[in-house]
Image (cartoon, rainbow, N blue to C red):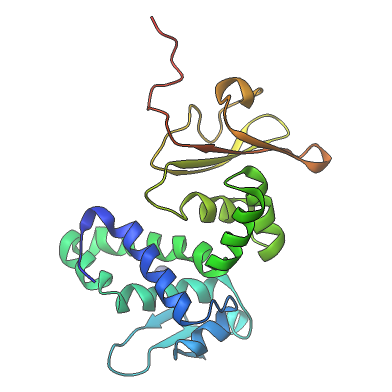
Length: 229
Ligand SMILES: [Zn+2]
């Protein structure tokens, strides 16, 4: 895999998707590790020991061992960052301090992709399009949080412009996910009428008055919400 520092995120997403095809879209962390021939064992710290030449080993604290957990997905992602060649290139390009921070973020981002494989996203999109309802469908299918389902759909096509947001019942923005676009508000903003600031957004009213989930697609510029002078 060639290295382009401007495309680290999209390139890692593409790599994860290729590996998942190879692993038959296994979404259970332990079975995924096994399918990819990573050995998982119990130890004092959660850590990955990736290798290209022998078996990669993942160590998990006992209370994380034995089931599918986000900690295991994170460690699997560390092995994938290494296998993809990104680890070596990122450390070379950014140095160890910034480099390891970037790698940690990549591994956290990877969890949404490992937990929600492509066929689940494709089926949900086929049913509901690129809409807020699709985010709900992803949550129903895979038991992930709002934030994870939002990230998975918004980042699914890294060349598209998409954004998702969650507005709680107090009308404050409590979650945001963006790709190639900006929203006219951020976490903590009060947005009583999302329809007014984002007239074209797909909105889904959550049951029991829990708030509003929204999805906006490209075409907007950074300052689009300012009134003309
Ligand atoms: Zn880590």
